[in-house]
Length: 191
Image (cartoon, rainbow, N blue to C red; front, top):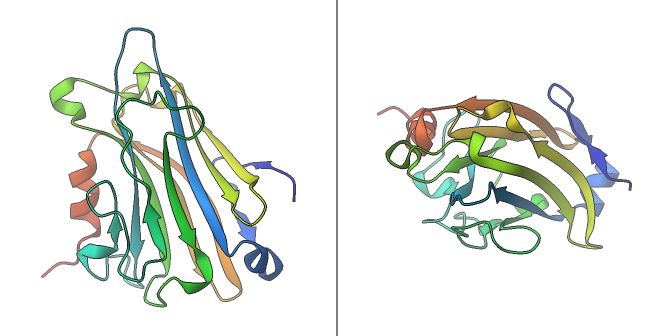
């Protein structure tokens, strides 16, 4: 299966065959900071139910909650500098066994403490998100985050939506300045 560069507005449907092949995937986030700078990016996954909300707080997987309640989404830990070779942060996903209450995964990249530190995506040289098939280590999707978000502090970069025949990746490329807490507030069920 060749690498496919996904672009805004173009979904990539994982067919039934692909879903069998792609039972386990890795989402990798990498970034470089402009010379002399330091910036902490964080990858997060909101596992949403039919109503577009978290079934419970534990379905928000990020640096302070590394594993979903079903154990099928695992964050491998926080990288605070982006200095690592290859992917700086990784999230492992076991697609076939994700709880049936989860209908969608939303992937967010945020800048830690951006408002207080006056950080934004304009301070990045390059950033990317990619999806790797763990059965053969082949990169199957690669999405370049670019300088279009120079004033933003978060980017919702993709959705993974459950369909009757499997999953579909949808790039969203939506920059915001609401902070990670803004997304938490958006996806927490109203009391």
